[in-house]
Length: 126
Image 1 (cartoon, helix red, strand yellow):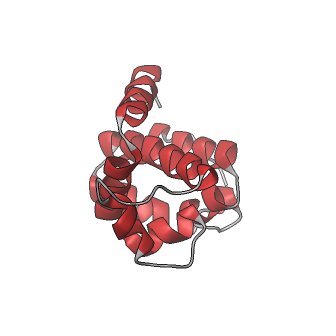
Image 2 (image 1 turned 90 degrees about the horizontal axis):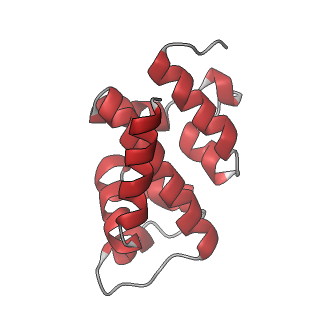
């Protein structure tokens, strides 16, 4: 990922309040993926988080959701929304055949970012 794209994605993510960020991630990935990424077992919770006056996810979930949004933004800018969604939910050979959203849930942020960088730059090797 180009440094400008990464910086832009980081800046956008940092400026979003968590409710708007969750609303976007629900739209892009679906609430079921968002709840799994966040580490909760209530598929309705992402919808409540997306409401401006709704509850706020716990700190760990916020970190994972923000990181996922940054990667989402970089992938969708480089490719398309469809490709970014497919990348997030498909098994990935660089992540031990784990889907990136699940790798993020497991705390594999560096590995997931490296896999996204390789995908975007066409430099990944399984």
